[in-house]
Image 1 (tube, rainbow, N blue to C red):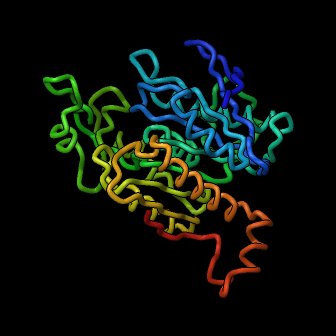
Image 2 (tube, rainbow, N blue to C red; image 1 turned 180 degrees about the horizontal axis):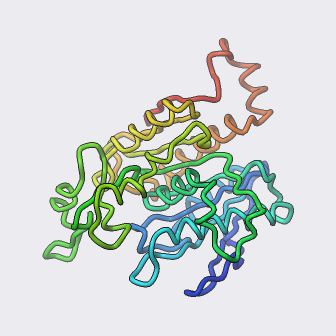
Length: 308
């Protein structure tokens, strides 16, 4: 499936684009899903997402892959959040052309992209994160968040998470040593310098969860060695404790970025489709539940824990 590439913002480092994949199946959900790649905040590109984006577009969603500025010596945090805010406003302003409803704009991120999505959802009211060129009269509308294996808490220190071994590949022992048992990973990778725990908490999504956080589906492989699964368990618990609709989906014995495998991607997008149809109140699903469920009142649009 080909994507339509459109510039949504200009930055000193160059233009930023969205890649739009239109619904390709028999259904159109009138819903935009902004899709963000991973790569440790410093690598990656939207095109890496295309097979996964296309799988969701086939279920009736307008998938908008978002190019955000990669962090470097010249680009510092919170640049990706600033960019995603601009992309959200662009989608809101072009809703009619995209064929979507402005109250049905969703964020979907993987790894670092999930962190950016969660941080953006949790800082919607912080105007200091707006780019000067944005029209801040355009609302930042986020109907739901899909967070795949997200870093949710960062910790201080002077060492990065990913260290290359003698063979040039990631040193798994170093990665394990720089993780905490509660799932926290070094903020060094994000901030690009040694930092305190206080600095790290400021960029940790767990600290941004409140009662007005959007409904969230969190996805994690139980054998993830890059971001420990406990991170997503903690996020799910924090969301529930704040009264936020939260669904945790775990994939047994799967590692980081497991959904790059087409068979897993197919199953994951089916979960996303069902979650979004529930929390967005799709009439066809409500009717289906009413016609087929023995106890329909026991199937609210709320949290559940699914294991595949």
